Image (cartoon, rainbow, N blue to C red; front, side, top):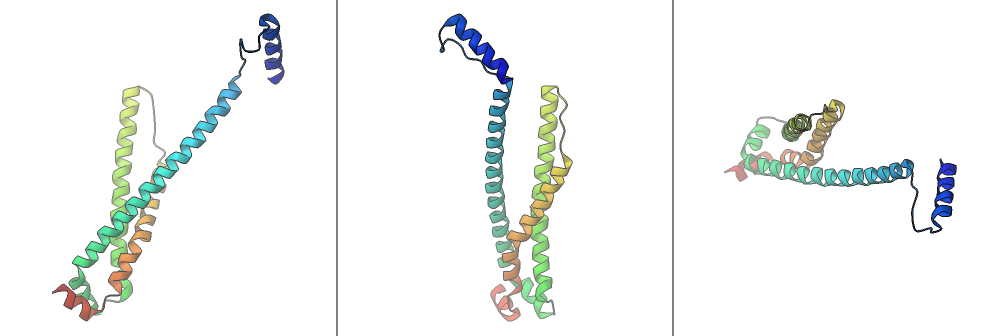
Length: 168
């Protein structure tokens, strides 16, 4: 390929006698440029996704902290009748995971609808990579565990008498 480009450039230089008059490029140059653009876009999308996950995780943590605050009396009653710290923690972790998984499922359904609409509007067959979709749901559950851990630990550390007193 390089030999062909060099011979064409030599021929055009001989014919025009001006190096600035024309340029020769091949598809591999364009392909290399497109690969660079694709890599940059992938990094950009990964950064946007990371920021979105961080914001979503903080939102889950705030919702769970409000839930713990509103349910201190319930937590106190459960602990007073014998619930262990791990049971309280598991309850709030499950709530955080369900909350984040539902958010992920809603996002997946909206994505499938958007891809289907695009395929219909463009008149071309498009599909969804379900492996990536299920991996995203799993990652949402992981975000629920990570960002729900602090509120769950806070709820499980409440003393029954303090929780009952604060709940009044």
